[in-house]
Image (cartoon, protein in one colour):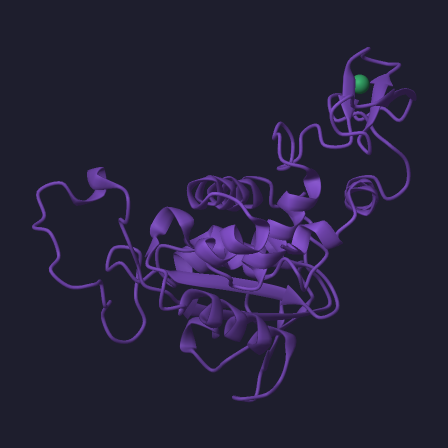
Length: 279
Ligand SMILES: [Zn+2]
């Protein structure tokens, strides 16, 4: 039987990882030095190159310090898995496509989701930046400590109507996207001024043009040093595409999300479309 990962080349996967993490020259993940000596290949994964740092003397390979390090499955299985997750494919379907056990896939997807959240880079946005938020239903799935003393639900969590907060189990996911550039996505407790202002000030450079919808929470943007413009409702802009992507990824019928996984789902949704900055 033919499986998707048999059509994908391990050498190309390693090449892509090297390209993304070291666009100019190999750098030591321990001390950032570029004084590196090659040390052959990994004995189990022949395409994986090994190096030794001339400054700190430590050894590392193509995957050291990445979300793909330390697994026995070939890199192509992990990359294909990550790609399928980005296309909103269920664990069961991924297991079928990759010919893996479903519980192994469950572990793989949880690790990848946690990895991309922990490793998301700190970005600074400037120029034209679009901001938008979506509200996703997310309870305490898998976390019994969050619901101690509460009676068990008989039906699925539906979430209150309208704009929600983390306390009402409908947290806002706030996205900021620079036109033609980077993205910053965060899960917030609510969308009040005191929550939103510090996030925007540390992410968007003063003097940038910020596009939002007409929600009155954004009315103080001009006072904070930004040029504030409005996005026409229904316009096909990067910000609205980002928000639609979030909603599509969170509305899949087979998924009910716990609050600890929501950000991971949303970040992985962007994987095939962006340049996977989380490796
Ligand atoms: Zn080093």
